[in-house]
Image 1 (cartoon, rainbow, N blue to C red):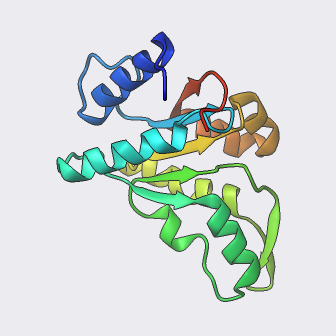
Image 2 (image 1 turned 45 degrees about the vertical axis):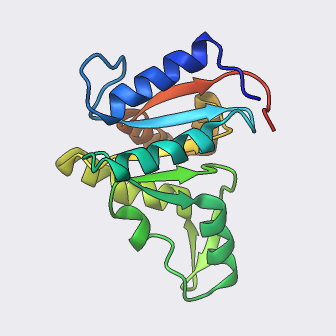
Length: 170
């Protein structure tokens, strides 16, 4: 059984407001969300609910779900896999963001997938309002350590941090 403390109630209330573009939302409506906290705190499950909520209600903030673990594993195992092109398109949530970091060899070159995706999405955010959401166990401090300075600065501009507190509910 999940017990929703005041922090979770506040998060859920603001997520509902965010996805329906209610101006009473306490977060900027034009930025994506960076959901972070310990493993098992409900970040992915809650975002899956909002993915379905937005789709079924034909809301403008519909998004596609991407597992960064799957992207990294496929990039390492399939030499013909393009990890960037599909992931810079559409409003999107990146689950397990920063679980894997560093470069992989793709098309004969070294590529940091996290950084390349953010670099590709950033101009789309700036010029077209494309939204990027992240789900991560890494705090914003750890994200700062795991990304280059310029890419982290772009992430900060693109998203609002939402901290899921507590212990694993698994």
